[in-house]
Amino acid sequence: MPGPNPLDVMPTMTGDLERVEGELLRAALSEDPYLTEIAAHLISAGGKRVRPGFAIAAAATSTASSASGPMDRETTREVILAGVSVELVHLGSLYHDDVMDDATTRRNVASVNARWGNLQAILAGDFLLARASEIAASLGVEVAGLLAATISRLCEGQVLELRTTFDVTRDEASYLRSIEGKTASLLSSACRIGGIVAGIEAAHLDALTVFGRAYGMAFQLVDDVLDLVSTDDELGKPAGHDMVEGVYTLPVIAALGGPDGAELARLLTDSMSEDDRWAALAIARDGGWIDDSIDRARSYANQAHDAIASLPDSPGRRGLTAAAAYLVDSVEAAAAV
Image 1: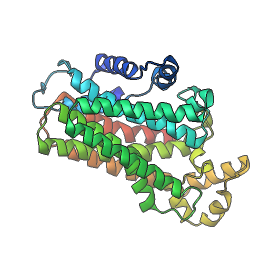
Image 2: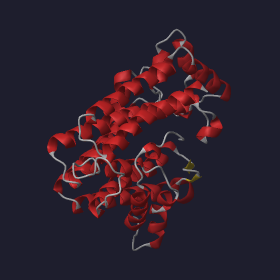
Image 3: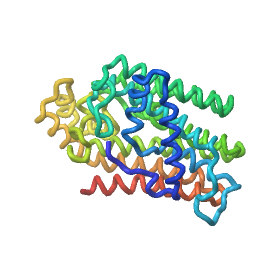
Image 4: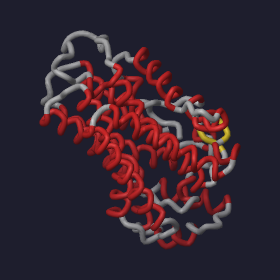
Protein backbone atom coordinates (compact mmCIF):
# COMPACT_ATOMS: atom_id res chain seq x y z
CA MET A 1 0.00 0.00 0.00
CA PRO A 2 1.41 3.44 -0.86
CA GLY A 3 2.35 5.40 2.19
CA PRO A 4 5.03 7.42 3.90
CA ASN A 5 8.59 6.23 3.55
CA PRO A 6 10.46 7.10 6.75
CA LEU A 7 13.80 6.67 5.01
CA ASP A 8 13.01 9.79 2.98
CA VAL A 9 13.64 11.91 6.06
CA MET A 10 16.45 9.91 7.63
CA PRO A 11 20.13 10.76 7.29
CA THR A 12 21.63 9.77 3.99
CA MET A 13 22.14 6.01 3.88
CA THR A 14 21.85 5.34 0.18
CA GLY A 15 25.13 3.45 0.09
CA ASP A 16 24.14 1.30 3.06
CA LEU A 17 20.80 0.39 1.51
CA GLU A 18 22.52 -0.53 -1.73
CA ARG A 19 24.66 -2.92 0.32
CA VAL A 20 21.45 -4.29 1.85
CA GLU A 21 20.06 -4.98 -1.63
CA GLY A 22 23.17 -6.90 -2.59
CA GLU A 23 23.08 -9.00 0.58
CA LEU A 24 19.36 -9.70 0.15
CA LEU A 25 19.95 -11.07 -3.34
CA ARG A 26 22.89 -13.10 -2.04
CA ALA A 27 20.69 -14.55 0.70
CA ALA A 28 18.13 -15.65 -1.91
CA LEU A 29 20.67 -17.75 -3.79
CA SER A 30 20.02 -21.48 -3.85
CA GLU A 31 21.69 -24.39 -5.60
CA ASP A 32 18.39 -24.68 -7.45
CA PRO A 33 18.01 -21.80 -9.97
CA TYR A 34 14.23 -22.25 -9.90
CA LEU A 35 14.08 -21.60 -6.15
CA THR A 36 16.51 -18.69 -6.50
CA GLU A 37 14.21 -17.04 -9.08
CA ILE A 38 11.16 -17.40 -6.84
CA ALA A 39 12.95 -16.34 -3.64
CA ALA A 40 14.44 -13.25 -5.31
CA HIS A 41 11.18 -12.20 -7.00
CA LEU A 42 9.98 -9.68 -4.41
CA ILE A 43 13.51 -8.57 -3.57
CA SER A 44 14.00 -7.53 -7.19
CA ALA A 45 10.62 -5.76 -7.12
CA GLY A 46 12.07 -3.30 -4.60
CA GLY A 47 10.55 -1.89 -1.45
CA LYS A 48 10.91 0.84 1.13
CA ARG A 49 13.37 -1.22 3.24
CA VAL A 50 12.06 0.44 6.39
CA ARG A 51 13.20 -2.39 8.66
CA PRO A 52 16.83 -2.57 7.54
CA GLY A 53 16.87 1.22 7.50
CA PHE A 54 15.82 1.26 11.13
CA ALA A 55 18.43 -1.35 12.06
CA ILE A 56 21.12 0.81 10.45
CA ALA A 57 19.79 4.00 12.07
CA ALA A 58 19.56 2.30 15.48
CA ALA A 59 23.21 1.26 15.18
CA ALA A 60 24.04 4.88 14.31
CA THR A 61 22.62 6.05 17.67
CA SER A 62 25.76 4.60 19.25
CA THR A 63 27.73 7.14 21.27
CA ALA A 64 30.60 6.32 18.93
CA SER A 65 28.67 8.10 16.18
CA SER A 66 29.44 11.73 15.48
CA ALA A 67 26.78 13.95 17.03
CA SER A 68 27.32 16.78 14.60
CA GLY A 69 28.11 15.24 11.24
CA PRO A 70 26.07 13.25 8.72
CA MET A 71 25.67 9.50 9.03
CA ASP A 72 28.84 8.91 7.04
CA ARG A 73 30.74 6.60 9.37
CA GLU A 74 31.46 3.25 7.81
CA THR A 75 28.58 0.91 8.62
CA THR A 76 29.92 -2.52 9.47
CA ARG A 77 28.92 -5.57 7.50
CA GLU A 78 27.42 -7.01 10.70
CA VAL A 79 24.99 -4.06 10.92
CA ILE A 80 24.07 -4.51 7.25
CA LEU A 81 23.40 -8.21 7.88
CA ALA A 82 21.30 -7.32 10.91
CA GLY A 83 19.07 -5.27 8.61
CA VAL A 84 19.02 -8.05 6.02
CA SER A 85 17.89 -10.62 8.59
CA VAL A 86 14.82 -8.62 9.62
CA GLU A 87 13.95 -7.75 6.02
CA LEU A 88 14.07 -11.42 5.06
CA VAL A 89 11.56 -12.17 7.81
CA HIS A 90 9.33 -9.42 6.45
CA LEU A 91 9.64 -10.74 2.89
CA GLY A 92 8.97 -14.33 3.94
CA SER A 93 5.84 -13.19 5.74
CA LEU A 94 4.66 -11.37 2.59
CA TYR A 95 4.94 -14.58 0.56
CA HIS A 96 2.73 -16.32 3.11
CA ASP A 97 0.32 -13.36 3.40
CA ASP A 98 -0.27 -13.34 -0.36
CA VAL A 99 -1.20 -17.02 -0.27
CA MET A 100 -3.66 -16.41 2.58
CA ASP A 101 -5.15 -13.39 0.79
CA ASP A 102 -5.10 -15.02 -2.66
CA ALA A 103 -3.33 -11.83 -3.80
CA THR A 104 -2.46 -11.47 -7.47
CA THR A 105 -0.03 -8.54 -7.26
CA ARG A 106 2.56 -7.23 -4.84
CA ARG A 107 4.72 -4.15 -5.37
CA ASN A 108 3.31 -3.69 -8.86
CA VAL A 109 4.41 -7.14 -10.04
CA ALA A 110 2.66 -10.50 -10.08
CA SER A 111 2.64 -12.10 -6.64
CA VAL A 112 4.67 -15.27 -6.23
CA ASN A 113 1.55 -17.38 -5.67
CA ALA A 114 -0.11 -15.95 -8.80
CA ARG A 115 2.95 -16.60 -10.95
CA TRP A 116 4.23 -19.91 -9.59
CA GLY A 117 1.49 -21.27 -7.33
CA ASN A 118 0.65 -21.46 -3.64
CA LEU A 119 2.92 -24.38 -2.80
CA GLN A 120 5.94 -22.67 -4.33
CA ALA A 121 5.12 -19.40 -2.56
CA ILE A 122 4.87 -21.13 0.82
CA LEU A 123 8.15 -22.98 0.36
CA ALA A 124 9.96 -19.89 -0.92
CA GLY A 125 8.67 -17.95 2.09
CA ASP A 126 9.97 -20.70 4.36
CA PHE A 127 13.31 -20.54 2.54
CA LEU A 128 13.61 -16.80 3.20
CA LEU A 129 12.74 -17.27 6.87
CA ALA A 130 15.40 -19.98 7.10
CA ARG A 131 17.96 -17.67 5.50
CA ALA A 132 17.01 -14.96 8.01
CA SER A 133 17.60 -17.38 10.87
CA GLU A 134 20.93 -18.47 9.39
CA ILE A 135 22.14 -14.88 9.18
CA ALA A 136 20.88 -14.10 12.68
CA ALA A 137 22.78 -17.09 14.06
CA SER A 138 25.98 -15.73 12.50
CA LEU A 139 25.44 -12.52 14.48
CA GLY A 140 25.24 -14.26 17.84
CA VAL A 141 22.96 -16.19 20.16
CA GLU A 142 21.10 -13.10 21.39
CA VAL A 143 20.21 -11.96 17.88
CA ALA A 144 19.20 -15.47 16.83
CA GLY A 145 16.94 -15.89 19.84
CA LEU A 146 15.34 -12.49 19.41
CA LEU A 147 14.59 -13.07 15.72
CA ALA A 148 13.09 -16.49 16.43
CA ALA A 149 10.85 -14.98 19.13
CA THR A 150 9.83 -12.24 16.70
CA ILE A 151 8.75 -14.76 14.07
CA SER A 152 6.57 -16.36 16.75
CA ARG A 153 5.02 -12.97 17.52
CA LEU A 154 4.31 -12.38 13.83
CA CYS A 155 2.47 -15.69 13.62
CA GLU A 156 0.49 -14.96 16.79
CA GLY A 157 -0.57 -11.54 15.51
CA GLN A 158 -1.61 -12.93 12.16
CA VAL A 159 -3.58 -15.81 13.69
CA LEU A 160 -5.37 -13.37 15.97
CA GLU A 161 -6.37 -11.33 12.93
CA LEU A 162 -7.56 -14.45 11.08
CA ARG A 163 -9.71 -15.50 14.04
CA THR A 164 -11.63 -12.22 13.83
CA THR A 165 -12.06 -12.10 10.06
CA PHE A 166 -15.60 -10.95 9.16
CA ASP A 167 -16.37 -10.57 12.87
CA VAL A 168 -18.25 -7.29 13.36
CA THR A 169 -17.83 -7.73 17.13
CA ARG A 170 -14.04 -7.42 16.87
CA ASP A 171 -12.96 -4.98 19.55
CA GLU A 172 -10.16 -2.46 19.88
CA ALA A 173 -8.13 -4.60 22.28
CA SER A 174 -8.08 -7.50 19.81
CA TYR A 175 -7.05 -5.18 16.99
CA LEU A 176 -4.19 -3.66 19.01
CA ARG A 177 -2.87 -7.07 20.10
CA SER A 178 -2.90 -8.22 16.50
CA ILE A 179 -0.99 -5.25 15.07
CA GLU A 180 1.51 -5.37 17.92
CA GLY A 181 2.36 -8.92 16.88
CA LYS A 182 2.15 -8.74 13.11
CA THR A 183 3.73 -5.28 12.60
CA ALA A 184 5.21 -3.63 15.69
CA SER A 185 7.20 -6.65 16.87
CA LEU A 186 9.40 -6.76 13.77
CA LEU A 187 10.06 -2.99 13.74
CA SER A 188 10.91 -3.18 17.43
CA SER A 189 13.29 -6.07 16.80
CA ALA A 190 14.88 -4.27 13.85
CA CYS A 191 15.87 -1.43 16.16
CA ARG A 192 17.04 -3.73 18.94
CA ILE A 193 19.04 -6.02 16.67
CA GLY A 194 20.77 -3.05 15.03
CA GLY A 195 21.69 -1.81 18.49
CA ILE A 196 22.88 -5.22 19.70
CA VAL A 197 25.19 -5.66 16.72
CA ALA A 198 26.57 -2.14 17.27
CA GLY A 199 27.42 -3.00 20.88
CA ILE A 200 25.00 -0.52 22.44
CA GLU A 201 24.49 -0.81 26.21
CA ALA A 202 21.32 -2.24 27.80
CA ALA A 203 19.37 0.90 28.79
CA HIS A 204 20.01 2.44 25.37
CA LEU A 205 18.87 -0.82 23.72
CA ASP A 206 15.66 -0.76 25.73
CA ALA A 207 14.92 2.79 24.54
CA LEU A 208 15.40 1.74 20.91
CA THR A 209 13.13 -1.26 21.46
CA VAL A 210 10.36 0.91 22.88
CA PHE A 211 10.81 3.31 19.97
CA GLY A 212 10.43 0.50 17.43
CA ARG A 213 7.31 -0.90 19.05
CA ALA A 214 5.60 2.50 19.32
CA TYR A 215 6.58 3.43 15.78
CA GLY A 216 5.27 0.08 14.56
CA MET A 217 1.90 0.66 16.18
CA ALA A 218 1.68 4.10 14.57
CA PHE A 219 2.87 2.66 11.25
CA GLN A 220 0.06 0.09 11.11
CA LEU A 221 -2.58 2.61 12.18
CA VAL A 222 -1.41 4.91 9.38
CA ASP A 223 -1.50 2.04 6.89
CA ASP A 224 -5.04 1.18 7.95
CA VAL A 225 -6.22 4.77 7.65
CA LEU A 226 -4.68 5.04 4.17
CA ASP A 227 -6.66 1.95 3.11
CA LEU A 228 -9.83 3.93 3.82
CA VAL A 229 -8.97 7.47 2.70
CA SER A 230 -6.82 6.87 -0.41
CA THR A 231 -8.21 6.50 -3.91
CA ASP A 232 -8.27 3.20 -5.78
CA ASP A 233 -5.54 4.49 -8.10
CA GLU A 234 -3.30 5.53 -5.20
CA LEU A 235 -3.67 2.15 -3.57
CA GLY A 236 -3.42 0.04 -6.70
CA LYS A 237 -6.47 -1.85 -5.41
CA PRO A 238 -9.97 -0.89 -4.27
CA ALA A 239 -10.13 1.49 -1.30
CA GLY A 240 -11.45 -0.32 1.73
CA HIS A 241 -9.74 -3.54 0.66
CA ASP A 242 -9.31 -4.57 4.30
CA MET A 243 -13.08 -4.36 4.82
CA VAL A 244 -13.70 -6.44 1.72
CA GLU A 245 -11.29 -9.06 3.09
CA GLY A 246 -13.08 -9.02 6.44
CA VAL A 247 -10.27 -7.30 8.33
CA TYR A 248 -11.90 -4.59 10.43
CA THR A 249 -9.37 -1.97 11.49
CA LEU A 250 -9.61 0.69 14.18
CA PRO A 251 -11.69 3.29 12.27
CA VAL A 252 -14.14 0.58 11.18
CA ILE A 253 -14.35 -0.88 14.69
CA ALA A 254 -15.12 2.60 16.03
CA ALA A 255 -17.72 3.23 13.32
CA LEU A 256 -19.41 -0.07 14.15
CA GLY A 257 -19.97 1.31 17.63
CA GLY A 258 -21.37 4.57 16.30
CA PRO A 259 -24.87 5.68 15.32
CA ASP A 260 -24.61 4.06 11.87
CA GLY A 261 -23.04 0.88 13.24
CA ALA A 262 -26.01 -1.37 12.50
CA GLU A 263 -26.09 -0.26 8.87
CA LEU A 264 -22.32 -0.72 8.55
CA ALA A 265 -22.55 -4.22 10.05
CA ARG A 266 -25.22 -5.09 7.47
CA LEU A 267 -22.86 -4.04 4.67
CA LEU A 268 -19.81 -5.91 5.96
CA THR A 269 -20.26 -9.36 4.50
CA ASP A 270 -18.05 -11.79 2.62
CA SER A 271 -19.90 -10.91 -0.58
CA MET A 272 -19.85 -7.10 -0.61
CA SER A 273 -21.04 -5.49 -3.81
CA GLU A 274 -19.39 -2.37 -5.20
CA ASP A 275 -22.30 -0.28 -3.95
CA ASP A 276 -21.94 -1.84 -0.49
CA ARG A 277 -18.22 -1.07 -0.47
CA TRP A 278 -18.77 2.59 -1.25
CA ALA A 279 -21.57 2.86 1.31
CA ALA A 280 -19.36 1.24 3.96
CA LEU A 281 -16.49 3.58 3.07
CA ALA A 282 -18.78 6.61 3.45
CA ILE A 283 -19.74 5.51 6.97
CA ALA A 284 -16.14 4.76 7.97
CA ARG A 285 -14.93 8.10 6.60
CA ASP A 286 -17.59 10.13 8.40
CA GLY A 287 -18.24 10.60 12.08
CA GLY A 288 -14.67 11.46 13.07
CA TRP A 289 -13.42 7.85 13.11
CA ILE A 290 -10.53 8.63 10.77
CA ASP A 291 -9.44 11.64 12.84
CA ASP A 292 -9.64 9.58 16.02
CA SER A 293 -7.38 6.91 14.52
CA ILE A 294 -4.90 9.53 13.33
CA ASP A 295 -4.87 10.95 16.87
CA ARG A 296 -4.09 7.48 18.18
CA ALA A 297 -1.27 7.14 15.65
CA ARG A 298 0.04 10.53 16.75
CA SER A 299 0.02 9.34 20.36
CA TYR A 300 2.13 6.30 19.47
CA ALA A 301 4.47 8.46 17.38
CA ASN A 302 4.91 10.74 20.39
CA GLN A 303 5.72 7.69 22.53
CA ALA A 304 8.36 6.73 19.98
CA HIS A 305 9.81 10.25 20.07
CA ASP A 306 9.89 10.31 23.87
CA ALA A 307 11.53 6.88 24.10
CA ILE A 308 14.74 8.09 22.49
CA ALA A 309 14.62 11.78 23.41
CA SER A 310 17.13 11.36 26.24
CA LEU A 311 19.66 9.43 24.14
CA PRO A 312 22.83 11.29 23.14
CA ASP A 313 22.50 13.33 19.99
CA SER A 314 23.51 11.32 16.95
CA PRO A 315 22.62 11.02 13.26
CA GLY A 316 20.65 7.88 14.00
CA ARG A 317 18.56 9.44 16.75
CA ARG A 318 17.78 12.49 14.63
CA GLY A 319 16.74 10.29 11.73
CA LEU A 320 14.49 8.05 13.80
CA THR A 321 12.89 11.07 15.47
CA ALA A 322 12.18 12.71 12.11
CA ALA A 323 10.73 9.46 10.77
CA ALA A 324 8.22 9.25 13.64
CA ALA A 325 7.04 12.83 13.05
CA TYR A 326 6.84 12.42 9.28
CA LEU A 327 4.78 9.24 9.53
CA VAL A 328 1.73 10.94 11.01
CA ASP A 329 2.15 14.25 9.20
CA SER A 330 1.85 12.43 5.88
CA VAL A 331 -1.35 10.57 6.72
CA GLU A 332 -2.91 13.77 8.05
CA ALA A 333 -2.21 15.37 4.69
CA ALA A 334 -3.71 12.37 2.84
CA ALA A 335 -6.84 12.38 5.00
CA ALA A 336 -7.35 16.11 4.44
CA VAL A 337 -7.48 15.77 0.65
